Image (cartoon, rainbow, N blue to C red; front, side, top):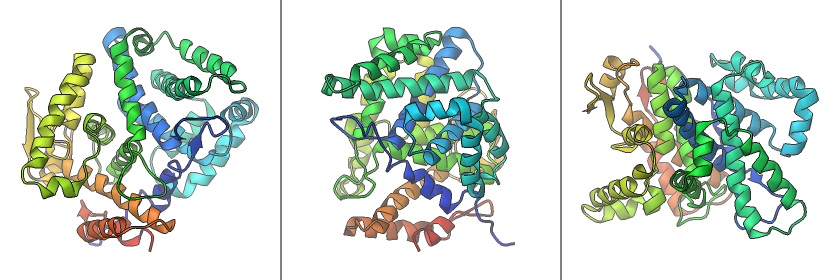
Length: 402
């Protein structure tokens, strides 16, 4: 039996990386560049925290699977409507939302129509679906924008219309004080600091020793890994809990780099025992600087995502983490909501696919180096024949950029 092509297309992967080229606030004097891919990654990190605060403090039922899907809908829309400034977009949406949504869905039809969620995406973007997850995403959107604009405001508060923009954004965030997480962000320094630390991953560039276009950040990279893992999970027939775990494991897997920076692989490999020692330092710093500052429920969830992030694992009936050497066994025996499993080998593939795309896209733009060329070739050699559950995952490596 021949292997199947993934539902995720090369075209959609290219579109996802378009967000790494979209500069935000390009009509303002900014001390650093703000990139759309990074903003979207920061938004869903904030949404994760806000969702947990609703569960912890308001005893609300929040569906993380639905939260991820609705985030994807908004993200895909933003990629297509990249050239419309937010104030203009909001005015257009008031009177012409249906036409805008139809345009977005038509542009994405060839890439997304084979996914089961495509029809729901249209209804969501029409505004026909309202739920707590949508409210959380909207609040997260405004808070991520505020986080950016506070930096711009402190850099140059006397620019034209800056005071007015600040007032509008602040009032948008204030309109969500009914959410426990927004109140915690406003009232408590520790929570605000942790969210800010995630934001700082925007400023750490990947492949830091070689120029690239686009120069993706660590935070942007984690979102690409999360999206790839989630979308490919449909072909692997992952259960809802595994889909959720893969998305957030992808999103949080580089969390320790907030504290240690991106230590490149040749350095780790070149000194015997260094990789293990770095991991020990990362665990200590994450525990001290991050986990002690957030509610225990969130800390426990994040630790499961980042501890042995590429290990195949599940939780037994006592909640103990069990590690399996075989990814096939994880899919065959623990692909159910109760096992809370993570297919770590698959996430490593997604992490490497993101790195491969980063290198190949830059080379295609004419910005190359021996590190990029050799890195891309090594990954292509490693994964060009990769197959999981009859899904040809090597196709991206064989065909991208060829």
